Amino acid sequence: MQTWANAAEYVQWEGDYLDAYKIHPRARTVDPKGRSQKPATDLFAIQMVADVDANSASLRVIDRMKIEPIQKQARVLNYLNVIVRFPPNDFQRLPPNRSDFDSSLPRA
Image 1 (tube, helix red, strand yellow):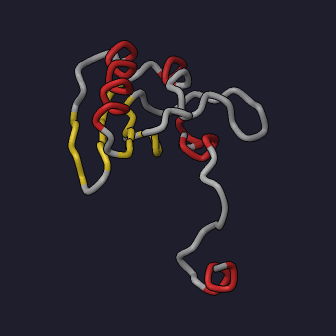
Image 2 (cartoon, rainbow, N blue to C red):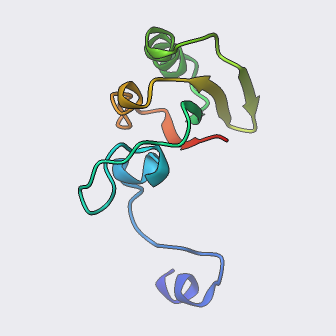
């Protein structure tokens, strides 16, 4: 596996998908050097692994944090994608360690 991963141009890393990877750096309020930064938007795309029970719990958390109705919610393959507005500081409280949480990134 490691030989293949080293030779394949499209493999970016081999290892665990850590919670820290799940929030895009531009969606964070602190940059990698620990300096404060303000995300350029309050609109975020959140991708969750499709899991009815876990998604229901995650959507309840999103519902409490959003500042307007969800703009888009769609199931694609084995994922549930949500586009929603959050105050950037509150967005940081969205727990990336949820079992269904896959990734998030700011939207322009």
